[in-house]
Length: 552
Image (cartoon, rainbow, N blue to C red; front, side):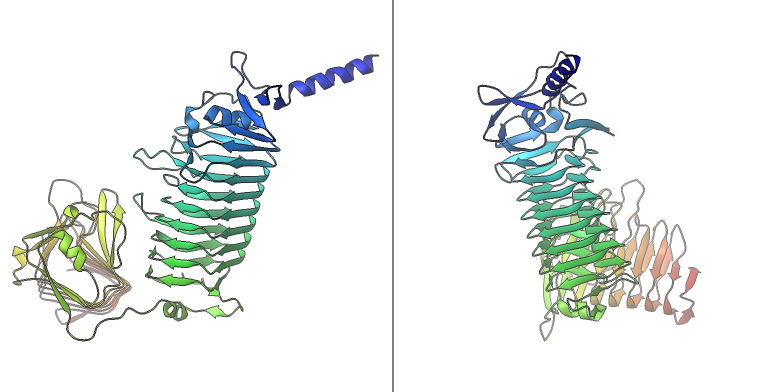
């Protein structure tokens, strides 16, 4: 008799702990042992195995294994849940504290489907900028589709990602939009069998996809854009892969991103990029930092990409047959720019908008204005154009000109003091040139506006440029350096006046063929000339040790 009573009590206890029980009206009342005594259980409409929800409280109440949650159109701000920062009342999810709030963690919810009414129609958001918007832990066979997710967009830096997966298996993410603020669109740690398909990942500050210690991931027919362009620095990588294997990224559009790498990987095996289109992307370090193992590149196209170099030292890629792909082979994948024969096209400019519109190869820009202030441009801080972009710095955008070969910028009358090119942000270089060959700058002054304050940006910066001539220019602080160059060939500075810069006059590294003639240096905060790893350096006819020199 006692044995029967114990069985009966066990059955009653089991029923009381069941997450959902269908009532006569066809609704599911969510019951959980964690509900405080004063909390009213949330009733969620339930029919044919589908929980239809229209509020964030109903969403949280409906989470659990072996069920489908249908999200009605609208915005679901998780930080506005009635249980926020307390007990969820649901054993399948809980709130975990982060630096500036709480994030929702879904755990052990196998065979769960969350479906919205469409991208931009159903929106999941989180206010805390250190919180993941959706975080899954130890779940199996989860499907998420047809919604948009990201942080609310109040001003400020973001540290949390959008979808975070930990120890999950068989997760499918389809037809979603994942946006920043959010450092990473999808991050997965110790996961298996992940699919991300037909989705948009955009405006995230650090990565599009991040995989760690994961196996078997398929990213297909997705769009990655505007990554690394919403914060004070560029993204780490569009795809960041560590200690993972069996990864395929195929048929994706990858465009208008600013990052250190397109792909950064370490300790990976069987990584294939197939039939992707890379368009209008900037790689500050290299396109592929494949440390440890090569990736396979098969049928990808690269259009209008600005790349300092394709492979980091010791890194590389192979084709579908396993043949090594070299730096020169990658350069051949991008069609060379067609420079018209004959004289340069001359464009006279009187303001910042006209200056920007004129930037391009085989062009002579003639300045006919007292001041060209880039911060006054209508396009100031906007999206990248074919030959220039704005780089977000600590206190404002900086102009970067790239790929504009045979470009001349000069004043109309050659009178240096009558024409000034300026930048307001004190952390920005006034003019940065990347991958520009046969460049001539002449007869104008450049520097930062001179309001009081500390300055961290320089005046002229050259990266990976060949045959640069700077003649009869005034380069002034606020600006930490008058001229800075990295990885260039053939730079000539002639009759330039470099003054009031806080860290010195000229600093060049890994550059060969440097000629400095009849330049003046005055009121500087450091050495006039600094060379590191340079060769063939001549100053006023005198050879200088370019490997390591600080002087004059």
